[in-house]
Amino acid sequence: MSAIDLAVRDSTTMLRRNLLHARRYPSLTLNLLLTPVMLLLLFVFVLGDTMSAGIHGGVPDRSVYLAYIVPGLLLMTIGSTVIGTAVSVATDMNEGIIARFRTMAIHRPSVLIGHVAGSVLQSVASVVLVGAVAVAVGFRSVGAGALDWLAAFGLVALVALAFTWIAVGMGLVSPNAEAAGNTAMPLILLPLLSSAFTPVHSMPGWFQPFAQYQPFTPAIETLRGLLLGGRIGDNGWLAVGWCLGLTLLGYAWSTSAFNRDGR
Amino acid sequence: MNPPTNGIAIAARELRKSYGDQTVLDGVDLTVPSGTVFALLGPNGAGKTTAVKILSTLVAPDPGSGQVVVGGHDLATDPQAARAAIGVTGQFSAVDGLITGTENMLLMADLHHLPKAEGRRTAARLLERFDLTEAAGRPASTYSGGMKRRLDIAMTLVGSPRVIFLDEPTTGLDPRSRHDMWQIVRELVADGVTVFLTTQYLEEADELADRIAVLNGGRIVAEGTAEELKRLVPGGHVRLRFTDPVGYRVAADALDGAAGDEEALTLQVPADGSQRRLREVLDRLDAAGVEAHELTVHTPDLDDVFFALTGGAPQAAPTRSNAATQPEEALT
Image 1 (spheres, rainbow over the protein chains, first blue to last red):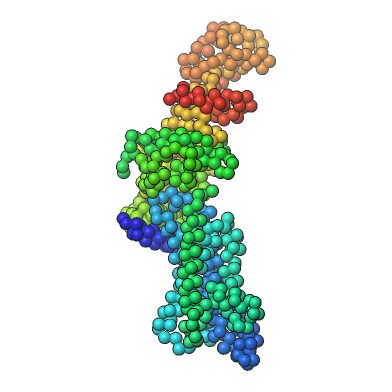
Image 2: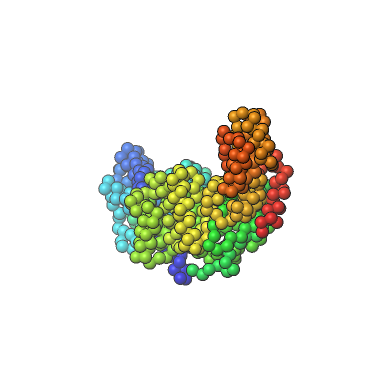
């Protein structure tokens, strides 16, 4: 069996294991979905009038604000789901079965790849679920063609891949599940400091550079452009660049943490 | 199944491992012939688990260590080939608690790249063999300690390893599960598998092992068969207790070489535990016309060896350094 065959086969086996976990114990994933859904309902139905007046020239219109925040919330869903990834990786690493895997003649990174592939699938499914809630409360895309949808899906998958690798690294360096949950917390807070809820130009000047160039804002602006037909500009490249960079960083960090000597 | 070269399953020279300034293994040599059971015996913290971790490729030995060959493969140059030859059951169960017994077994079958149908057959056969068929559909986290350990071994066997490491396989098990586990080890050896086990139970090493090495403070302080180790400590004796001082004195005269305790009215007569020696003692007592109130036969067991070698007794400290070199000469 060639090295590639071995890698694919073992990674598929590990992916099956992780999906089995997710299917058997869906509560963690579903709990993490609550945050973006609650925020969606809160911002649209409770705070919607005030928020929309701010971005709509003083005229309250909830549907305008709904359209504005959905792209951000969809990507925030990824930030939320990968917290679950960090927690389940940290939990898994304390299980004896990981030591067993390390003593077997398998493709070593497949343990991590299984986690990553499973988590990306879960993230995408979560985004679809939150998207469905958004559609149910009135969100509609504007002028998005098949290619735009395809690109939107690709972007969601890419963002999920990038943040999943980072979360896997966080899970690996955390001694236990609680610590992993805390370490990964910024991943759901970061979208709050982006253009998800308010435009960057409405923020204090000193804060704008951070909000403008942190990884979530270009991704959110790109998704907004794809789903609602706005201008994407440099945000597309910035988003892809961030994702590839974070993926490489997370991959290198995770594999080196995983290959370090056991206790 | 390629048999390891020279009939040696495990050969390690000068194993060293330190964590920070704490030395865990301080130059350990191990040789285990194929198809035998080797027990690494030692108190908690002696370095047993670290030795298993190194031999099973989980951690690397320190740079000062010599060559480690497992299943004919040098761990430094070809760990992956060694991994293909071994199976490991650690001290803490290496099962996936979130999935069922069957799913755990099929996971192993997939990772060993068995064809689907063969994987299912192997899983079912091993679950049956280890009496887990009934529980196979339940998550492993609901299993008792003994069941988890059996599932653990069953998973280890999916890949038909030639060398199996069992790190404290019966720690925390009830007596019945412990005997089950012993039976399992005997069956493995009957199949020609090499078993390397660690234990802190002397009885266990005595029951199972062809050779025993006593590890203490990161060094092998004695090595040999159970019989050889027992010969390292003073021999057995028959202990006689009397109720009256007259009988005690008559018996003491009749049995030369007996060590007496006048206060307690007890005599200790050297005896190797054989029937002949016992009869001889009894015949002498009969001839002298005395009868002991109570008679006990004491044979040296590994406990005596263990305490003598690992410094359990207060006076053992100075003899420890002797023990480190002496058995080597005496036993090999």
